[in-house]
Length: 140
Image: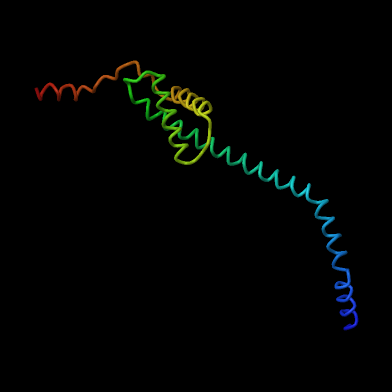
Protein backbone atom coordinates (compact mmCIF):
# COMPACT_ATOMS: atom_id res chain seq x y z
CA UNK A 1 0.00 0.00 0.00
CA UNK A 2 2.81 2.37 0.87
CA UNK A 3 4.50 1.66 -2.44
CA UNK A 4 1.29 2.57 -4.32
CA UNK A 5 0.99 5.88 -2.48
CA UNK A 6 4.65 6.56 -3.16
CA UNK A 7 4.25 5.73 -6.88
CA UNK A 8 1.20 7.99 -7.23
CA UNK A 9 3.00 10.83 -5.47
CA UNK A 10 6.06 10.37 -7.70
CA UNK A 11 3.90 10.32 -10.83
CA UNK A 12 2.18 13.59 -9.80
CA UNK A 13 5.50 15.28 -9.04
CA UNK A 14 7.16 14.07 -12.24
CA UNK A 15 4.48 15.29 -14.66
CA UNK A 16 1.18 13.73 -13.76
CA UNK A 17 -0.08 17.02 -12.32
CA UNK A 18 0.62 18.67 -15.64
CA UNK A 19 -1.43 16.04 -17.46
CA UNK A 20 -4.31 16.53 -15.03
CA UNK A 21 -4.07 20.33 -15.38
CA UNK A 22 -4.08 20.09 -19.18
CA UNK A 23 -7.09 17.78 -19.19
CA UNK A 24 -8.91 19.96 -16.65
CA UNK A 25 -8.08 23.11 -18.61
CA UNK A 26 -9.32 21.58 -21.84
CA UNK A 27 -12.58 20.58 -20.20
CA UNK A 28 -12.96 24.09 -18.72
CA UNK A 29 -12.31 25.77 -22.07
CA UNK A 30 -14.79 23.51 -23.86
CA UNK A 31 -17.42 23.89 -21.14
CA UNK A 32 -17.09 27.68 -20.75
CA UNK A 33 -19.49 28.60 -23.61
CA UNK A 34 -22.16 26.40 -22.08
CA UNK A 35 -21.61 27.80 -18.59
CA UNK A 36 -21.56 31.35 -19.98
CA UNK A 37 -24.86 30.77 -21.80
CA UNK A 38 -26.46 29.42 -18.62
CA UNK A 39 -25.26 32.43 -16.63
CA UNK A 40 -26.52 34.86 -19.30
CA UNK A 41 -29.95 33.20 -19.30
CA UNK A 42 -30.13 33.43 -15.53
CA UNK A 43 -29.21 37.12 -15.69
CA UNK A 44 -31.87 37.77 -18.35
CA UNK A 45 -34.53 35.97 -16.33
CA UNK A 46 -33.58 37.90 -13.20
CA UNK A 47 -33.59 41.18 -15.11
CA UNK A 48 -37.02 40.54 -16.65
CA UNK A 49 -38.47 39.59 -13.25
CA UNK A 50 -37.08 42.80 -11.76
CA UNK A 51 -38.49 44.84 -14.66
CA UNK A 52 -41.88 43.23 -14.12
CA UNK A 53 -41.75 44.17 -10.45
CA UNK A 54 -40.80 47.76 -11.38
CA UNK A 55 -43.75 48.06 -13.75
CA UNK A 56 -46.14 46.61 -11.17
CA UNK A 57 -44.90 49.22 -8.71
CA UNK A 58 -45.26 51.90 -11.41
CA UNK A 59 -48.89 50.90 -11.97
CA UNK A 60 -49.61 51.14 -8.23
CA UNK A 61 -48.00 54.57 -7.95
CA UNK A 62 -49.81 55.77 -11.09
CA UNK A 63 -53.18 54.71 -9.67
CA UNK A 64 -52.44 56.46 -6.39
CA UNK A 65 -51.24 59.62 -8.15
CA UNK A 66 -54.29 59.74 -10.41
CA UNK A 67 -56.60 59.38 -7.41
CA UNK A 68 -54.68 62.11 -5.57
CA UNK A 69 -54.79 64.67 -8.39
CA UNK A 70 -58.39 63.92 -9.33
CA UNK A 71 -59.68 65.77 -6.27
CA UNK A 72 -58.29 69.07 -7.61
CA UNK A 73 -61.38 70.36 -9.41
CA UNK A 74 -59.71 73.59 -10.57
CA UNK A 75 -57.07 71.88 -12.73
CA UNK A 76 -57.71 70.80 -16.30
CA UNK A 77 -57.24 67.17 -17.42
CA UNK A 78 -53.84 67.74 -19.05
CA UNK A 79 -52.59 69.58 -15.95
CA UNK A 80 -53.76 66.72 -13.76
CA UNK A 81 -51.95 64.23 -16.00
CA UNK A 82 -48.73 66.28 -15.90
CA UNK A 83 -48.94 66.45 -12.12
CA UNK A 84 -49.58 62.71 -11.83
CA UNK A 85 -46.61 61.98 -14.11
CA UNK A 86 -44.44 64.31 -12.00
CA UNK A 87 -45.51 62.55 -8.78
CA UNK A 88 -44.80 59.12 -10.25
CA UNK A 89 -41.43 60.23 -11.64
CA UNK A 90 -40.45 61.52 -8.22
CA UNK A 91 -41.37 58.15 -6.68
CA UNK A 92 -39.34 56.32 -9.33
CA UNK A 93 -36.33 58.57 -8.74
CA UNK A 94 -36.61 58.13 -4.96
CA UNK A 95 -36.49 54.35 -5.43
CA UNK A 96 -33.76 54.53 -8.13
CA UNK A 97 -35.98 52.90 -10.75
CA UNK A 98 -35.19 53.94 -14.32
CA UNK A 99 -38.29 54.00 -16.56
CA UNK A 100 -38.53 56.52 -19.40
CA UNK A 101 -41.04 59.36 -19.22
CA UNK A 102 -43.07 58.11 -22.20
CA UNK A 103 -43.81 54.79 -20.48
CA UNK A 104 -44.66 56.62 -17.25
CA UNK A 105 -47.09 58.88 -19.12
CA UNK A 106 -48.71 55.86 -20.80
CA UNK A 107 -49.16 54.04 -17.49
CA UNK A 108 -50.60 57.20 -15.89
CA UNK A 109 -53.04 57.52 -18.80
CA UNK A 110 -54.08 53.89 -18.38
CA UNK A 111 -54.54 54.47 -14.65
CA UNK A 112 -56.69 57.52 -15.41
CA UNK A 113 -58.87 55.52 -17.82
CA UNK A 114 -59.29 52.81 -15.21
CA UNK A 115 -60.02 55.41 -12.52
CA UNK A 116 -62.58 57.14 -14.74
CA UNK A 117 -64.46 53.86 -15.22
CA UNK A 118 -64.67 53.17 -11.49
CA UNK A 119 -65.77 56.65 -10.40
CA UNK A 120 -69.33 57.99 -10.59
CA UNK A 121 -69.98 60.92 -12.90
CA UNK A 122 -69.02 64.14 -11.12
CA UNK A 123 -70.95 66.54 -13.37
CA UNK A 124 -74.08 66.35 -11.20
CA UNK A 125 -74.04 68.14 -7.89
CA UNK A 126 -75.05 66.13 -4.88
CA UNK A 127 -77.79 67.81 -2.88
CA UNK A 128 -77.16 68.30 0.80
CA UNK A 129 -79.42 66.37 3.17
CA UNK A 130 -82.48 68.25 4.39
CA UNK A 131 -81.26 68.25 8.02
CA UNK A 132 -78.09 70.11 7.01
CA UNK A 133 -80.02 72.75 5.11
CA UNK A 134 -82.47 73.22 8.01
CA UNK A 135 -79.65 73.40 10.55
CA UNK A 136 -77.93 76.11 8.51
CA UNK A 137 -81.15 78.11 8.30
CA UNK A 138 -81.68 77.88 12.09
CA UNK A 139 -78.19 79.22 12.84
CA UNK A 140 -78.81 82.38 10.81
